[in-house]
Amino acid sequence: PTPDPDPTPDPDPTPDPDPTPDPDPTPVPDPTPVIIDKSDLVTIGDINFGLNQSYVQSRFYSVLNETANLLKASPNAKILLAGHADITGDEEYNVTLAMKRAESIKKYLVSRGIDESRISVVSFGETKPKFLSKTAAGRALNRRVEVYIQE
Image (cartoon, rainbow, N blue to C red):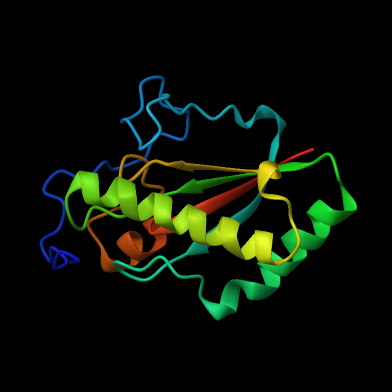
């Protein structure tokens, strides 16, 4: 069962999310702490999701198809999918939901011919918002998977 979305805003939102990697991130389903070194990664942008949803929306098919083609053209390149959630719902649920989002992007790329061994997935749950969580628009933008390619 999916919990009802919490309509109340975050009582103490972070005014400016910290863009640097968190040295001690919240545990994710994999017990290894996740720290992303972005120095050799290229982002292709964010794939956004609806509230409590983890399926890939059709408006993102073209960018994901281009990503698959890029990976096919660069056989040594790997991809990292970092799942995120907004502050709606409890933290444990959001870690799981963010992982499901990253896994759904992975499944899509595998369906486009990319070997799953080239795809890494991580979940940050609600711990790394890019946008203010006190607005509906900010929360919507925080429901995302960040896609990084490593050449």
